[in-house]
Image (cartoon, rainbow, N blue to C red):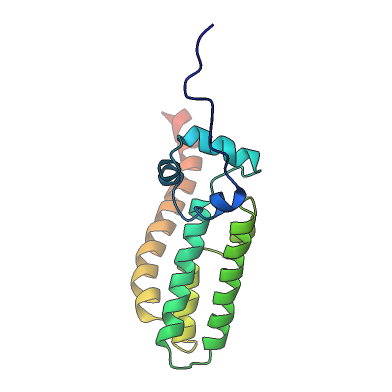
Length: 165
């Protein structure tokens, strides 16, 4: 009979020990706890955690940092109350995600780029930023419409051009 590798005594982990490390990548946590990643994943599945939530937590942390910067910097604009409310909402969502890592609550928040744009608009008092609308909108809009039109026309034109060859 082949011998099993390892000592057979794997460390039992509590959900609290796991949730304290959700803000770190799974490889770092495994190294920190002295386990291999496979065993850590097995312990996670025993607690009902299907995926390691590091990226979800990191996303929410980035959004919290983006929302916190204008709140601290603004003296008291009209949108400051809305920004503070949104910041508290994201913090609550992060807590929900820590307690239930299988939660889809992070999907309701949106993307960081949109949050930054909203925070910038609120900080300016409802006016759009010139650099946001001018430079990036023209370059990406022109490229995508030209590419989209070319690929759309190319597919129908490509079909009629093939039999004609």
